[in-house]
Every structure is written in C-alpha cells, then in structure tokens.
Image 1 (spheres, one colour):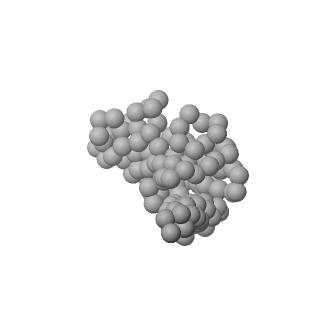
Image 2 (cartoon, helix red, strand yellow):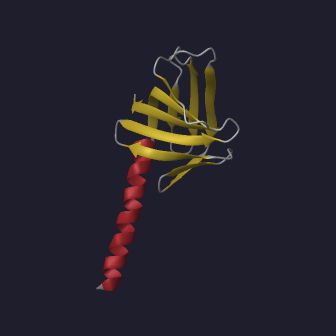
Image 3 (cartoon, rainbow, N blue to C red):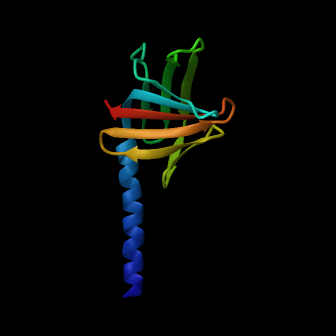
Length: 135
C-alpha cells in the first residue's frame, strides 16, 4: 500500500512539472517591467517603443529580446537596459535554468495566459521582474 502511494505521488509530481513546461512553450508579450535597485527604489516601464519585446519558449530553447527605458519623475537620469537571451533551458521547481548564462530566471507566476519571472542582475545591483501575457 505504501509503495503504491509513493509511486502515485512521484507520477503526479512529474506530470505537474511537465504541465507547467507545456504552459511555458509559446510566444509571450512583455506588458510591464519592474526594476528594484539596490537602494530600494522601484521603477516601472509599461510603454515599450517597439513590438519586438517578446519572449519565446520552444521545447528546447528560449529566445528573449526586451528593451526598456525609465525616466523616473522628478529625476534627471534614465534607467535603460536590455534583456537578450538565446539559450537552451530547463525547468526545476520555480527556476528556469539557462545553459549559457550565469543566472537563472525565477518563475513567480504561471498560468495558461500570464507569466511573471524575475532575476537579479548582479552587475547593476537590480532585481528585474517581467510581466508577460501569452500572444
């Protein structure tokens, strides 16, 4: 009896993991980018200048090109950045591991038409969160 419960729980665990991987596959459009810098300031960008701000997951690769730029109110500086990823990927729990990057994407939320992920950019001391919808 214990063995059968153990086998069923392992089967459910792996089938749920495969379901979330299937949800990731497709083209996602970036709706908003949120950046939290090392000092705790939060910046948002919702108006993207081009339509090329897309993230595409296929079965074996991830392609992302996202340009974003912020000019905070009452400030004289701009925050501009680009996320470019061309990598193989794999999913483990809530992390999306990238084979040719020194960071992983943390999966915050995933449904059939919404995706939220983030990563910490150590070179710029910024937590970058991306809010996407399925195209």
